[in-house]
Length: 400
View 1 (cartoon, rainbow, N blue to C red):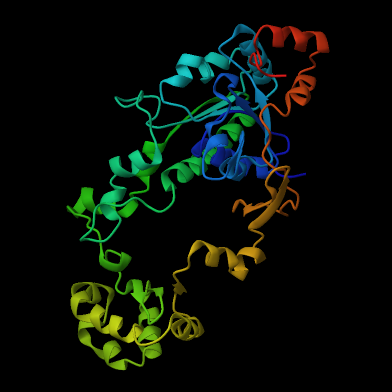
View 2 (view 1 turned 90 degrees about the vertical axis):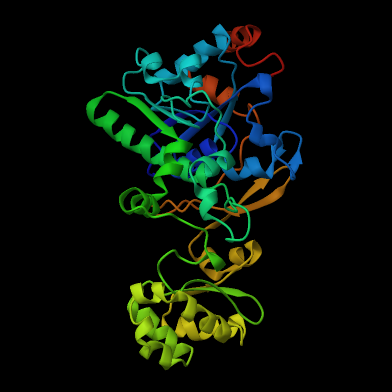
């Protein structure tokens, strides 16, 4: 059995952050039942361009493999009744909605404990369910601005810049999954569930880490750095070679000694101005131009061969296609395939979460409402009850 095969999660999720968090749980074997609102066409991620065909998109495929889908309008009494029956038989309710919405639609622990005292309710919201911003919508780009990330990213002479990936969304998905696992452990130990009040805001702020400590404790004022340089470790940054870019990092003094040997510049290693972390930081204006001149004289491949042989932390700066072609990705089982009736073979990156042997089979993301029959069977509904629920609008007026 996979680690989470005995876990059932009801997911009122949409777009990126929530589905990203729960896809790792699904990969680990959890039964993740996506509740998709038929009034809005289900998860908005189904319609994200540019690769869209009807209600299927490659964006949606990325975040929803190994899940099930049920169209359910929980705003109707009939739809709410189905939802509550699912709560009775499930371990968790998972959502990523605006901070005031879980209370409005009744999916907090206080709303559901009478149905299942051990249920864990994990709400991943923009700003959390408390505080003056609770009712504000939260999106990755917005949070990168509010949390100071953009002030740290980009060239000093350019504008504040977001990261190339939606790292607030994705990091928050991981935080929510970790919170849910803690909640499930406690619920199985104690028999009592509770709320996981997780937010993009909390995640983004927590990831300020040591610059925040420096700023609050020692008055540090973070600034953007040239060539993506580390704020204090020198050299630890991007360097331009004759035909591209590479990253070189001396996070330990031994790496600095190895680097000057590779560059055939023992004079730099003997220079008292560059003898320690602190001194290289103080004298970076004198050191970095010399290093840049050396790296610019030869190719990325030339430098990578020497640096890797010497054990200096380094890498080429790949584009996405080059990154995916690295043999390490295949060796680690990170590249997986699913079969889709429109997209054919969908190749994507798998979960980095590991325990024991990894599964070799993955299912494509579900069509909307694909699993209605399986889920109503799971709940023990006879055909006449399903028909009555459908007539009462539980599954949406256009669902069949």
